[in-house]
Image (cartoon, rainbow, N blue to C red; front, side, top):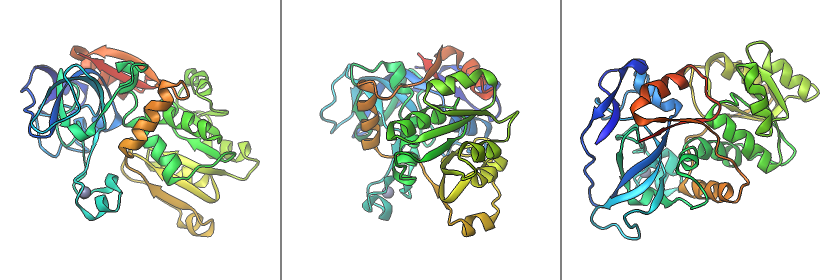
Length: 342
Ligand SMILES: [Zn+2]
């Protein structure tokens, strides 16, 4: 098959396009013909070596995949060749202490499609049958591929970890990112009020169109001051943070007392400082989150199918132009998800 893969760590120039080994389907697994695969920030960490692929190089990125069933391994039932499917990207063992507690996202053997095994920057990809769900006819392959990681992560962060309620105020970092554009919409669906940040003035209207009430260009305005002004000096109830570094630290200053910061990524840096006085004196909650469940993906698909949530697709590149697609994301030119289409 053809794939976009890399043999060495670095920037987009390390992405190669060409022949790659076909996935070998084992018992309980399904071979999927990829119709669309979304790029994700974790792809960039795998590529540049900040999060080296656990199984080594060469490696194929791509954790958000839609496609059709090409073939099924032994023991697979209920999936027929040609069926439209979406792959839930998280793998868990089902047997460790945390899986048995129902918290599969913190499984001690947790893995991601496109990280712990080859992903969807390819014509074919394999996944356990248990990770596949039907893609409703109402959702295109392209829209579907924009959902499984970014939207599920944003959903789990806001609904489960922050327990966001109607009327609360939320600061969502980086409206232009996949997770940011999903978080704004989900917060609005809950009935919360949203402020968000963008890195360029030409993304302000985009952020408003998603439902953000207040949009701040973080390059020209201080988002902490803006959050205080927007909330009448009170601070916001919830921050969705995925940048790290100074953005993480300053996000805690934007919180009101009893506020919650949900950390869902570290796209700039894995490190962040905290002024602990804010944490203990205001009884803040700093919680991490990592993807969500396959049931949450099903809930999101149902909402997209009936038009209550939108998949935000920036643009699709042919698989053969994966290098340009990766550079487009690295340059932060995207508004929503960037896709590869074989
Ligand atoms: Zn487990």
